[in-house]
Length: 490
Image (cartoon, rainbow, N blue to C red; front, side, top):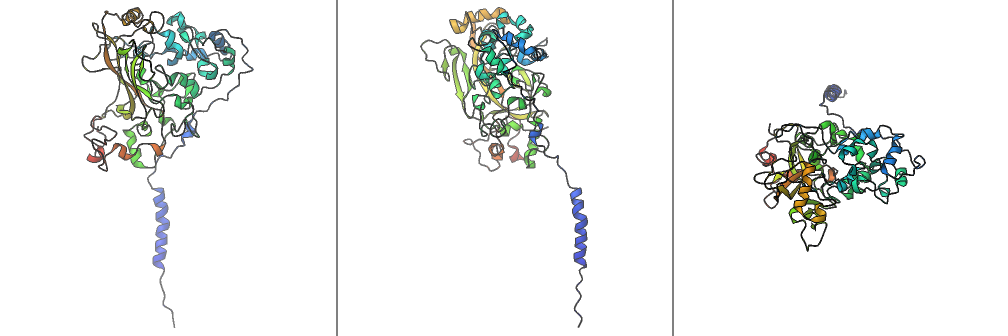
């Protein structure tokens, strides 16, 4: 008896179709830019040469140390003298409210912390990369031997600066010179962590907790990566990437340090997050809080300085500086930001007729294709102004006859007038000012970054008692984009 024949042709056809379709689908699939390993973009650094047997000494002055350095590093001083670390001044910029180009920087402009350096060089220059400010600016800036190699390269445990930017009187210059090395967070932090007069005062994202941070404080500087400042602030011929929005007007993107130096291509597995990158800066999600371990100053009232009978306390009141408030572990303020300033107060500009005077205003808007939503620290102050001339005043605070000695505001403004070039009417008051500081450090890994519900009301859980992190209307949106289904406005 013959067995029934079962045809296998459908199965064979299916196999043939799969053999053709699968390779075709693979070859024609949508492609994504390949992921790039961020560490591959870190700069290669020269091996350190121990200087203990190279440097001979003895040295009596900082200039003698620099002279010894220049014997081998012939162009180092002239390279430094071309940088803003040396000049403390920007390139001339054209601003819409001034007839002539202006320069902006610590050397000649006002902020709302210690106010200004002019006339106060004996104290302020303890964070300058130069010696010899007692000679005056013209002579100091022209002398290559005034470049302070030690402040950036000596072991900070062996070196400190004192009056007029000169080495501290107890510094062993030979020991300091023999300790030189590539820069570390300790070198940079000596000035940048303590800017504004103390640990964490000025920056909400830079303080002494970053000398030896945990991974949970900063994923780059802590844990297994242990990055140094110069890994991101890449340096060539002593020109360091990264410019301060507080001390400049227009900033060339080529001069800025950015996340994209290392994080290139497709940076998130979730495409929904990648779509945010046209409108949201990396820092907005990855720096959810500032001053995480050390407090930072958020208000400063100079009008209370000089009061008698009050006890000094670094965090609330100092007779020489006035009244303060600090905050810890708090969310930044968010603004559209394209990397430059819309406005920067120039010495002699009129103060606002109503409301606060802005020392700087970050540039950008929802309609600016170069702008991203970015986190900032906001610092408000009450600082002196001329009641007749209507502009902010810069006092002489430090040194003989300065406010910190006499507690006489009138005398401090009279002393400053010939130095700053601003006339003083003899009548002063105090006015509110506002200053913004971009937040770029204390970066969190993805496990501690912001999530959707931190900014969006998708689940309907937000109310007046539990607001969303972002003020969408203040940013130019009709409301939460998740609710109305919109995208960035053009």
